[in-house]
Image (tube, rainbow, N blue to C red; front, side, top):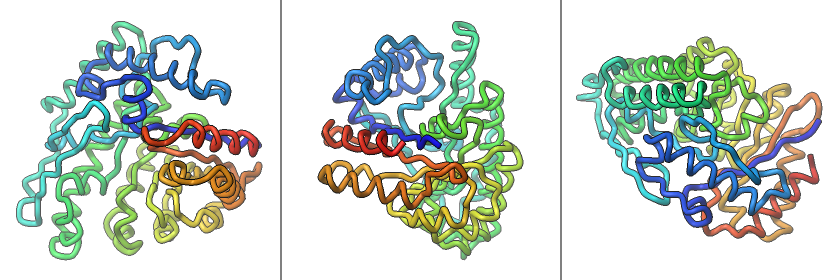
Length: 347
C-alpha cells in the first residue's frame, strides 16, 4: 500500500515565498482568497513540483477556508472571541478569560442572527452564485480548544470547582460545532482539509475534530468531561477522526479507544507504536516536528522519518501517512526536500 505524505506551511512561509497577506481579507473575502490560493499552489509547484506538490497552471478554486493552512478561529469568533490578524501569521484568538462565576453568561449562539456566521453564509452564497459549488476547508476546531478560548486557564480549575457549569459550556460548544459542521457537510463531504490537509488524501469523508489541548489534561478528565461530546460529534457525522497534535497522544488512548474513529493524527513526540497497537486498523497520520525539520541534519531527518514509518506500520492492514505541518519561513528548502525525498522513497 502506498504511504501518503504531505507538508503544510505556516503563514510566514507563504508571506515570504508567495507574497500572501493573511489579513482579514484573506479569510472574509472569497475573491481575494481565491487569487491568493492560485499564487500559493503555483509557489508550491515552483519549489517542490518534482514531488507532485502544487500546480503549474492552477485554476481558481471556490474556497471557504483553506487546505493550505491550519488556522482555527471561526467557531470561537462565533462565540464572542475577538480575532486579530497579521500579514504573516494565522488569526489569533483573544481569550475572553471567563471564570466559573460568569461562564454561565456564555449563551448558545443563535446562528440566524449571529453576525460572524452571517458573514460566512454570504461567502457561501457568493461562491455558489459565481461557481456553482463550494470547497469547504474551514478549520473545524474542537470542544476543549474553544472552551480554552473562552476561559483560558480558568477552564482547568473550573473542572474541579464548577463541573456542572463547565459541562453546560461544553454542551453549548458542541451544539455550535454540530450546527456549523452540518452546513459545511451539506456543501461537500470533504470538509476536514482545514484541520490537516493529509486527510484529503486518506479519509476525505471524515469529520476531524481538533483535540490539540487534550494534551494538557489527564485521560480521567477527558473521559469525565469531553468523551461524551466527541461521541456526539461522531454520531452526528458518521466517519469521524481525532486530531491530537500533542506530544503524548498515548496518555489518552483509553479514552480515545471508546470513540469510533476512521482517522487519528498523532502529534510529533507521541509514541506512535502505542497508538498503532491500540488502533490496529485505523488510518494513523504521524506528525513530523516542524522544529526538527528546521534544525536537523539530512541524516537525522531520514532517521526520524524511517522511525515513524516503522512505528506507524505502513502496511495494507495498517493504513498510515506522515506529514509535517507548520513549516515556517526559517526552514530551508533543502530540509523540506530531504523530508519529501525520504517519504517518497518509502511510499
